[in-house]
Length: 137
Image 1 (cartoon, rainbow, N blue to C red):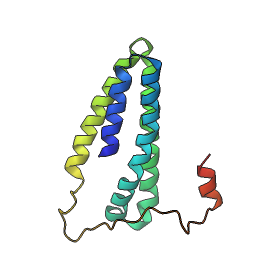
Image 2: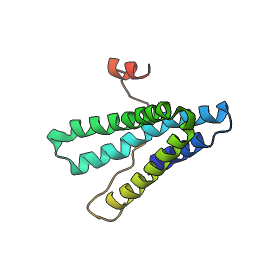
Image 3: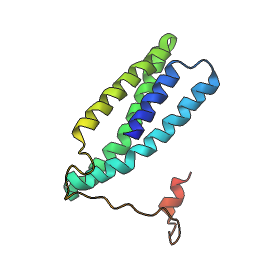
Image 4: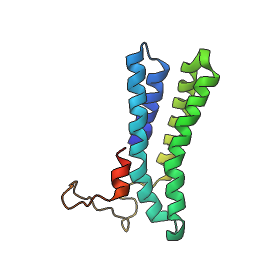
């Protein structure tokens, strides 16, 4: 939910930007919002999607955010003179999707059998493999 809110804020910010610095901030937030999407949706997939289809579902989630960003860029190109309007339209779409997700995704505590344990954020003991190293670049 935070990611969708951040994405909507970013789109509104880009639609009303008074200068290149604010536009750059919107672009920076665009990159961050996609990273925030993956963990909660990955958890939802592990709960509601059959194990043999989880890889495909995760792929669609991760590529879906990229499709959205690419689509917003295409919209900005097609409406070059009104590119701000494009980002305002995407902000509205993002808010509609946020409302839909809020209604569809179960609330924490709504199902007492469903519990997520909070982990500790630590890099101790983490082994770096080539794939992890490649993801940094």
